[in-house]
Length: 215
Image (cartoon, rainbow, N blue to C red; front, side, top):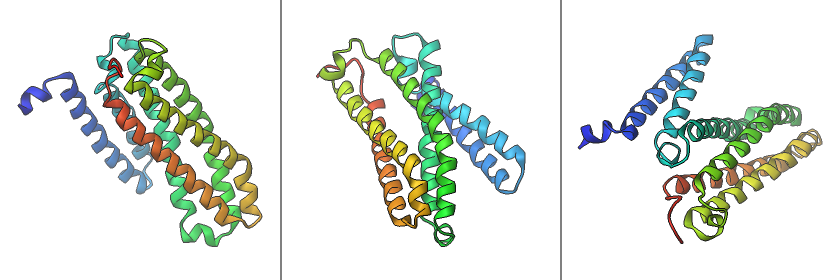
C-alpha cells in the first residue's frame, strides 16, 4: 500500500516535501555557523517545499489550468510563510527578557524592520490567495452556499483582522514602545499572532474541503 501511495503524484510530492524540509534544517544549521551557503540552501528548500505543497492538494487536482494554479499556490505559501513566520519571530524576540531590558527602542526597531517584510508579503499573499479562490470556486454564489465558501470566508475575515492589526501596529507600535508602553505593544503583537494562528487553522480545514462540495 505504501508503494502504491508513494507512486502517485501526491506521494511524490510528499517525498519532495520531506526532502525540502530536511534540506531546510541543514541550511539553517549552516547559517547558524555563519556560513552564507546555509541561507542559499534554506532559500532553495523553501521553493521546493512551496512547490510540493501545491502538488498535494487543490492546485494540482482542480479542473483549472495547472500552470496558473500551482504557481499561484506556491506564491501564496511562500508569502504567508514570510508574513506569519516573521511575525512569530518578532513576537518571540519581543517577549525575550534581553530585548525588554533594552527598552522600547529595541522593540521599535524590530517592529519597523518587520513592517517592510510584512507589507510586501501580505500584498503577495492576498493577491495570490484571491487568484486561488477564483480558480477554486465554480460560481461566486458558492462563497455563501458551500462548506468550502464558508471556511474561506472565515479565513478571509481572519486575514482581514491580521492585516488591520498589522497596519495599526506598524503605525503606532514604534511610538508606543518609545513612550515606554512596551506591555501594550507586546499585547497587540500577541493578539496579532493569535489571529494569524486562526488563519492557519482555517487554512488547514480549507485544504481538506472539497471546493466542489455542496452545502
